[in-house]
Length: 92
Image (tube, rainbow, N blue to C red; front, top):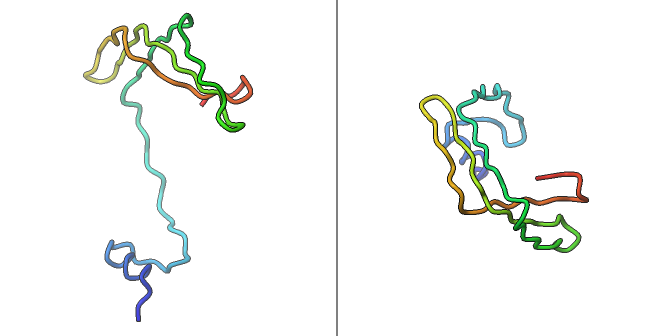
């Protein structure tokens, strides 16, 4: 009887031992666009911490931009974004 992991790897064309590490090169990353959203400080909704986790906030988007090769757009006011803050020093 064949091991399911070995069979799956062969079916995907990855043929490697079940416990070996792949020695592939990391992908080359290229900058494609910049997105910047401006958030309102006036109407921030504080959702409090969840079970000793980060505090969660929602803030209204007041504008911004999207720029890149072949891209040049303005973000209009409206909508919102959220952020999680741990101990008021680390933003996620």
